[in-house]
Length: 196
Image (cartoon, rainbow, N blue to C red; front, side, top):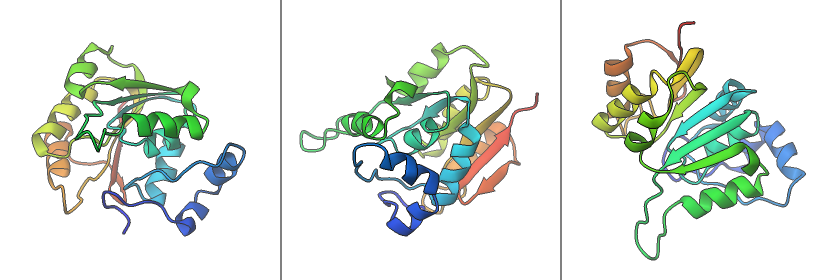
């Protein structure tokens, strides 16, 4: 079911992303990457990322990383990629394999750290697009929103995934509290352009 964790895009959904399918066909056959992004959200992120420097907060296995890196000039992907158990080593190796299989590893810098450690070290106004899809608890989203709001360039875009999603109502509450109400929503992808 679209919009829920663990959802993998099916073949009919990929048909809507024809440009990605055609590009991927020129590479070694890649495996599907787990995602909760819908096709509409994926298209919107790809369009926003085109030719831009992107910061992604929360990359998991890398589906959104790949979608944005296919059109972006560069993507910095921040995620701690914690090891869950010895049988579940986390998402870091999956992300690295995914960006390699989809041919975008030269446009992705993986920053293995928590956002609250990595983001304060980044200069203000460094990014054209910032996409946040990390820890979904309200206070964690509020911290991320506070940290990214000055990292986006004037005229750039902030985007948060799972806005107004039933299973994580804290995302919308935190985004509205820290960044104020307003913004465009595609499915559960909240987007706002910073004033120039």
